[in-house]
Image (cartoon, rainbow over all chains, first blue to last red; front, side, top):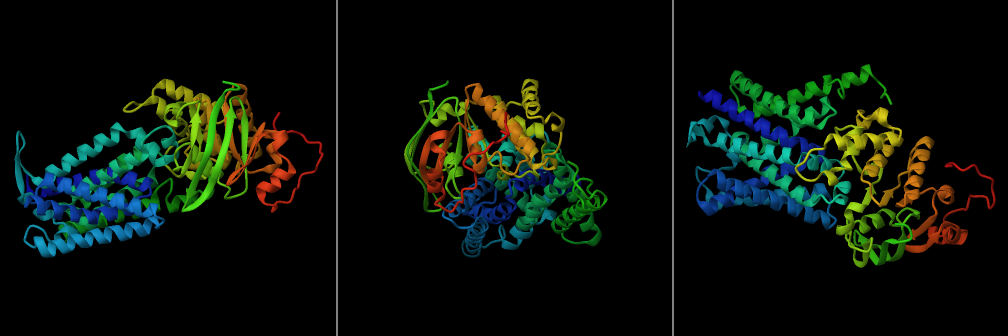
Length: 290
Length: 254
């Protein structure tokens, strides 16, 4: 495959996995948790590097999961001590991120890891860093990792679909039916962590937030069904990735930046033209029909 | 089921944000009763239900359902949260919300079958909501949303129900439909505890009353417990007694 094809495929996988996870982030009103985790996984990656002395997929995944869970746990803990949810998120992720930055500067400082790369990502270089898979041949490492994470996330979401729906809509009823709400919260945080770390190489910590939240928010405007929202969100993620690639090509600029820009454009279009919740529709049909 | 103790609470206390909101709670509930939990704002009515159902930690005391622990009796217990506790913009429809009441029975890794769907439809029909099964939940009125919640409780086929303000902000027609359903549940030997805010209707709706203000002020048959003295004790004298001593009323629920 050509370099362009690998880049588009990788970007599309980012769109797919982020679109899938993003829907539940929005519905659970945890959009800002993704911002927090996208930063704290840096600490996880740095720690994984310090332990294994290499930047490898599995070690990074484990590091990210631990960092993501630590973030979720600390936020929950501070919140239980009467600190506002938003404030606890702000305190926890900036502190953990700062530790990551200090570690990079003091202990790791070499070509493998740098803050610039972690924040912005560089999808352009992904096709150069390959591994050989049986039957398929030479494949970029980041693409393999993303495909793996997407499959895991998809299986977990589909297998426990009704439980995800119920714990998102009405956690009190879920708890009274005996569904382990808190445990599922941490499982979900794990999914957010692995999705974030897998997308990290491609789009970086900041753009991954755009890919997680914006396609899902756009999808929310188009439908009243959760299953359709999931499909639309994934579709919007992929469309943004592809459009973003060509915008970057056309303007000769950052691919990850263009992808995030494309998600914004899609959201704007949805916000104006969506037949159900768009602002145009509100003018045409001013009252709700009961 | 009738006359058997279905819920026994001993020496229960709970705190919320470092303040003790419930203390020395003690009462027994017999099967086949319809109980109104009445008290001022901040009396701990919702917290009491949440603490009983282990959604809120308890500091002291013990709770027994059907003579056993909550975990073992879970399947016999139904819960209707406050309508405002969920996001009604969630992308789902009325039938789907009712179906959620069955998720415990359906079990992990399984999808709802046709049988479950039929059950949910029947419950909607019972609440007069069958025409709205496919309606997005944000497009329902407050009363209709509450009826969907009640239908969801019905499909659970529990023996003991806890309902948090099911009559708050609903239209007269919905109030009648809900009370009709509650009385039917009682006739079938079920027990229902309802957090209620409208003092005017307590005598018409409930055969037992639990007056609550941080602790149980009094509990028992409505005729004995729901007296002027007890009410002003519960509300701390802030409340002006508006009801006439004797009046000829048309009962809103027949």
